[in-house]
Image (cartoon, rainbow over all chains, first blue to last red):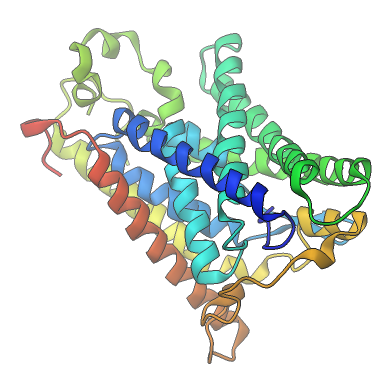
Amino acid sequence: MHVPDGFLDAPTSVATGAVAAGTVALALRGARRELDERTAPLAGLTAAFVFAVQMVNFPVGAGTSGHLIGGALTAVLVGPWTAVLCMTVVLLVQAVLFADGGLTALGTNVTLMGLVAVAAGYGVFRLLVRLLPRTRSGVLGAAGAGAFLSVPAAALAFVGLFAAGGVADVPLGTVLAAMGGIHLLIGIGEAVITVAVLTAVLSVRPDLVHGARHLRRPADLATRPGLRAEGALR
Amino acid sequence: MSGTATSGTATSGSATRSRRAFWIAGLVVTLLVAGFVSYYASAHPDGLEWAAGESGFADTARDSAVAGSPLADYGVEGVDDGRLSGGLAGVIGVAVTLVLAGGLTLVLRRRTGTADRD
């Protein structure tokens, strides 16, 4: 889903650049509340892991491929604000070092994969975590649904940007149908990978998963001395 | 790896060791994916490229200003073996991402004082 240079006009790219910069500024503040001595090293590792898995395109049929975006996975693992920062670093490294995604489209890609995919994925996750049973399966189901929907959400956001500032004069309905359809398929892969990775992490270190904090036993919660909660659970 | 959600009575020493083991295992998996598994990635166009072709705007894409960089398109310039070139590029990308994201999150983290020994 990495948008190259040239698809969107300059005003749209400037606007998404501003949205991306504002989002990162907010995330720099928000992530302070999510990161402590235990979770900070995991956040760096999560970003590196997303970079690695994004290299592995999987076939989705009809001569097309897709790869993990990782917005939902990262948000569930390390928290949504930290996820914005992790995704931004991944996209920056890809654009600058590997020419994957345009340089003038960096703001667009951060907006689509760092903001929309994270917000949609984590929003759906939080909603479903409240509705589903408070079990590991509930967390996995919520994360899978969030991951699945995060991909078409980002694809639809691209179509919105294309409607506002697409350089080519092509029928918007065609773009919408093609982008929406293929990214529903890619979303299935996103959900499978997200659930597989979370299953692995939850089986060895459930305490490190931001989105599974509510699964801790009540006895643990009772020991929480206010704001030092995270520190007390090591 | 014995460390599950621990009670407040667990010693922070063993929890720290378990965290470190988890982190190292995660890094090994990450390097294997970027350095080895990535060779087997599908080379088909991704969803956006495909949709751009279907809708007729693929030709508006322009080369990135860094399209000629030594790591462009996940290969290392001058390394002819495809498996080695892509694997090296992946490992370099993992290292750079880890340093940037890890450094940023370490700077931003809450320092919880004497209770932390790692």
